[in-house]
Length: 552
Image (cartoon, rainbow, N blue to C red; front, side, top):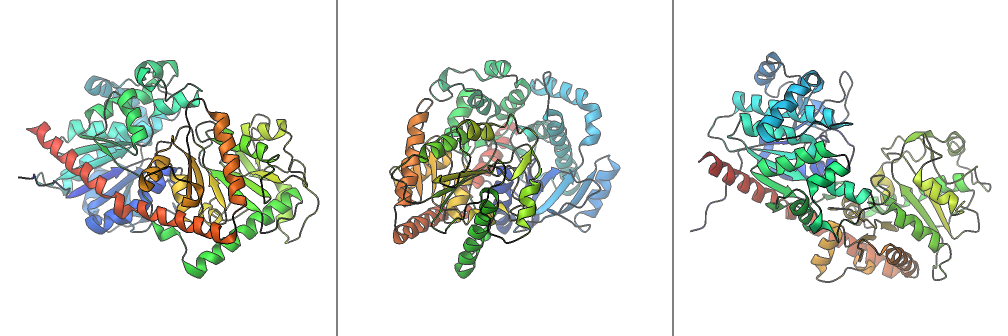
């Protein structure tokens, strides 16, 4: 007899990135919401931090008609909440909570976490307090809502993402044990730290002690809350097999479910709109590049780009730069290359000299001074990208077959220079390059292929391994994704393969390029949420089953 799978009657889900667009987890949650909403309707509630106090948050649509009696009770109990809907496809219910009042009581809260779950917050610093107090406040919101609106017969699940919301999961387990808890780590804090500190992560993964390394690398508090939550929730999940190995070795806990990150096609224009959007993107990119460098770019120019977090080694920015430098001397390169580094840095403002040129649709023949970047930086002298370009003599001279432009801002449509969103510019790229060293999943390459942009990634990314699995062999650029084998020590070989892949692509005719672009889009369709959402229901079943065992 097959046991009937348990499904939730109500789902709470919290993240620092609910109605707060700062990274890849925002994309995970916002693209998945519509798929979950179709099945669960308003039985799905996201909880996020209220960071726009006394200001209008464009991602939040307040709705006074949602649970007014509970809001009144929550307010009376000292919770500061706002109810409404997330302004994304599906418009799921959302509760924003002000966590600032709890900071005054953080020592008592940390003391309870130590006594109850041995969470060591003694060496906390930086963003730990804000994140943890939000997590705690979110846990109290779940408790209050459950007691006021839901019966004990309901199957209720609370899912938290990353270490930032872990404290809330532990609070709920202690105070509302009937609620099944799920913790999803998208990247362990200790794994990322090991990789960032130039220590070989993969060859010695089996030998690292996560707790010992957290002390050495000064991230004890984040590692502790992450590790203890992984061991105490009803279901522990991550996003790829790569991350799963990391969790097993560094958190000493094997994941229950692998939950791959999907995407939706709502963001991708169709038919004639796609063609127009791509044309507009390329036109804008070339306008900015011309105003900056004084070079006129023909449509034959190959636009290649890297984007994501500013993690110089982890995201492969170092590989990208070295590849562009070597491509300067690559004789097999058949087309000029314009390389964009779209990585938010410590930005000040848009360059005034570039801004002044962008006011006019002129064609410029003279470059601006230091024509390498679009926005001024607070740390101009120490910025790693600019230092590489300067020390390698990459000055975007007119006769150079490779031009590199650093775009150190969030492309939200209001940056002052491009004034187009990231997706609106992505569609104009020819190749997207993500030669990551540390990439538990890899949302940027998935976004790229969804917009019909072939990409380069590595075997150290969850996405790269998934692409190989889907094809049943190592994926190549004509398949839409070039997956380069990478390990702790083959930096130079990876760089050379990036250069040779660009050169090969530059020699393709229009028909071959179109085939590669169609294959990229076709592969992305296999990563739609309708295919990946089943793992979430597996996680719900596991969490509810383990809750039942826990409660006897």
